Length: 496
Ligand code: BES
Ligand code: MN
Ligand code: ZN
Picture 1 (cartoon, rainbow, N blue to C red):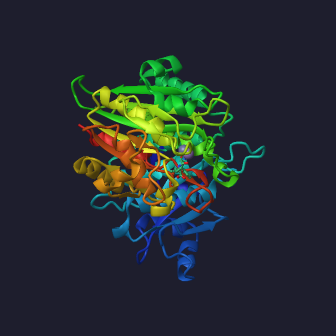
Picture 2: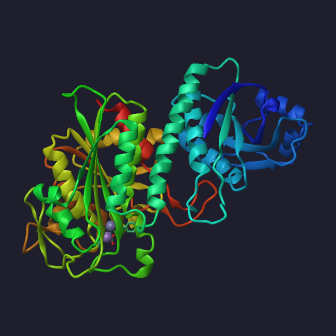
Picture 3: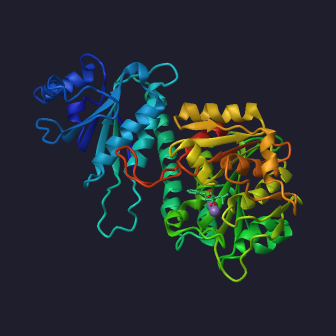
């Protein structure tokens, strides 16, 4: 999408749709009143009819906008000025973008009154709105013969003459990078396993790394074996698709500066293995590489923003399938760090993949680690569909991640890691087993991962629920969401 910043009266901006932010307050901002006048008072009439309260994400379409340069106007509630956050604005603009992109629309304009406040400046608001425009006009219908959603080609952002244009222009550039990164993640997650397998995922990552100047290393099976990644290789045995690990490097700071490691679960299809999933539970399992796709999206944004930090992304890529060589229940796998694991359920494969990836990160002298994984259904039972679970061995590091997610408006909730849970993953045969029983499943999975991070500061994010939605909502299309991309970039921006 091409973005253009203009200072103009609202009535002279040409567009298929002009989206106008309306606060939930008495009266209208002067810019809106001027537009109302050009429109012969239609905006005040809808308000008098109580159809326009300005409540967040409320939409009122004026389809026949005579006398102004835009063809149609969408009045968009942005809520009470004192309550505006990135999250509220994201929801509002997503709603507008989804509404407007469901018909053939190529050119849009957006005019938000300056409602800057503490903790959410005008630049923050524009950045958020621009990202939401990018995200909201892209959907999961990538295989429709007749498109049902139309990505905008041109967007005009209207600001007042007094505003700091240079600052707002860079906010727009940033918003575009954020939006495109989220869409990159969503696109990869939305593509079925017939298209995205470990080899093709690695090829996409390598192509993007070359495009944006990231270091890239791809570990093939021989290299994985050399690295003793027998837990990952155990999972991969049941698939005809060979596994890979991708490592991407962004050197934004001095060589001896601390390095942040982002590790992602990249199971490109999770059938459950011999502990086969029922069909209903298997349908969405093309999304089981969302952790890896999130890490990749974030990494591309980090590179494009040229953040002055050192970041390495590691993506563990494999299918979890069934064939004559599949790993079996009762098998014992020796992970990279020597820990032996008795397999009680081949569907608890994500933790096996991450075990080796995390231990590799530790050996590379990671200073801080965040891993992302669609790890457990239990996390969805605990927190629902919209909230990511956080688990840590280091409270200050976790607080950093929690603060970043709060500022970016992504919902994250920390879960306990009491020692007593360690009992649940002990095995009579090996050091540990890969399931912890019926209760506290998201926590026992995290406890399993903790065995592989040593003393390195680590946060595990279980994105099983929020990474993928099975329904369309006004503010969010079903399918992949790209959750946590923005939080990861925010964490990287603060990392030093
Ligand atoms: N990929 C799944 C977790 C999942 C479930 C993600 C639903 C998104 C939606 C994971 O590999 C898995 O199968 N976990 C099992 C673990 C169990 C066997 C201990 C689960 O959650 O049932
Ligand atoms: Mn599984
Ligand atoms: Zn899985």
